[in-house]
Length: 308
Image (cartoon, rainbow, N blue to C red; front, side, top):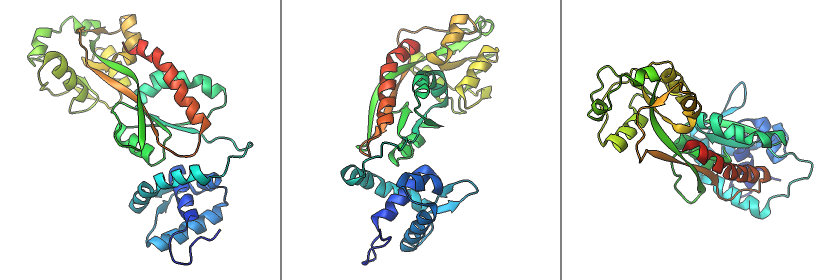
């Protein structure tokens, strides 16, 4: 197949190769996806870069890093190429193994709920590559085809992504028993936190402030004693008696059952977050991705029992 049309327009083969390398993060993996040799892939990318007037990738010791031009190009061509692949794409060979399922989500949820639920599929030979991060970043990667499925605590918008609710995560105000005995809830309600140490996921207290607003109907004004961007570490600090915090119930259910930590308050209407399972619209058929999605939907009933 020619790499450039005689009229100077970009060849679809170049764009298909570019998108494969962009999503895979390396020339070797991209070449495998499109069934070409690495030298051929390099030649196609060089021709495309000449046509577009600038580099698309920075070559790294391991893999490649997309330039700003590459991000822009991928955003423009991903959906049309995926739609075209459905219509004219080659049927997969029976002897070609499916690539890993690319799954993204919050690190704490993946560790506590998702990966244990997916263990049976791993034992059946389904491979996974897991990415952790913030919901907005993961959903961007999903739209660009760099992820197959995303567990998101915010509802995705736009027609290119389908999202279905899986479970609601309930937030609870917790402390170690010895700390809880010295906390005056009436003082907390009026933002009197003298002698109370707050442990937070972030410096602006996003989870704590949401709890205060929802339960106490006030804006929390305080400085955290400890900030650490991992809820599992927040839980460990609370259990060690370092202070109080707000955590998803599923994450601390075991510690609550064991009495390592206790809830300071059990309101009738606790704040919750809905967890969505997001996937892209269109694209080539991926039986393993479909199987993982079905398995997670079925496992959601167990999650619901965990998060309430």
